[in-house]
Image (cartoon, rainbow, N blue to C red):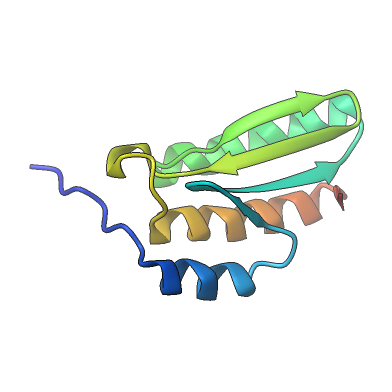
Length: 104
């Protein structure tokens, strides 16, 4: 039996967001964009998708010719923010840095 993820309180969300430089809250999701050329963005997305598959959590991803935008929320928690969202954001930051993506 699967458990519903625990939704973070407003105070927990604010605290977690303060430690994630460059991420911002948009409603019930956190978002961040990185500047990277199209083919580099594709490689970045593939790397992120591989990690997402392993941890069982994913971001909504928007690829443009010069940037990639990630938006994260926990669908299984009613599209609310959970610890898994912030864990994924930290992983995306590390992967983006490894691909030479620039914060936007």
